[in-house]
Length: 301
Image (cartoon, rainbow, N blue to C red; front, side, top):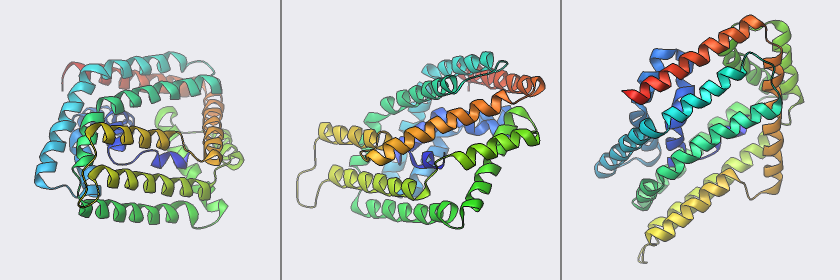
């Protein structure tokens, strides 16, 4: 679902990286998982610096906190991720249902929420230390991202967007199952054609989240000549902003997101149920390798 590309911004996206880095690295093979995970703080730092243009003091502090967060994640979360991979591996040989798929999605969401909660205090500290110049840099980065999003999802016609989504879906699926048969590609194609993806509504929500985040950042550094908010006030504002990023205050978007999530669960279940025993066995082997890497990473760098 393209709208998920902009679920959270700034630190909320960085800290999710620590949980999702495993899934991202899977595309490159097992050795890359360990390399990517161990370097997650560095990747996170450069991503954040690209938005906020951190000064030397901020850079040192952010690197320190991201390294601390990775250590916590290694000691606390990796075993839980390995257990989730094991659960998925044990389910893979059989047919599945959209409800089972959505349940797995919910399990992943819990792991991301745990990281967000752990990172709250340093995230608020960074937020309160930003300058007006850095906020302008963030706003310019948002504008650049928006142009790229428009080029990807608003330019061209429906057929072009469907083709891009199909290409991406096939590539992701083949990482687990191997080469798809034409009938399986047809399952993905039909799912995309029947989905209710609305690029205009998704883009409007992306812009709303950006405005919301910028307003929270401005409030957290305080207006010139006025007292800065307390840490408690800034923390409350941070939590509220994250909640609005996940649970949009726009009723139409909330309904759209729920439909899109249901579409994604149904599409995944339909594709999995169309796979051959050989394809499922390949997926089982992949999941077993990822699980093993997660457990090894939990024991040592």
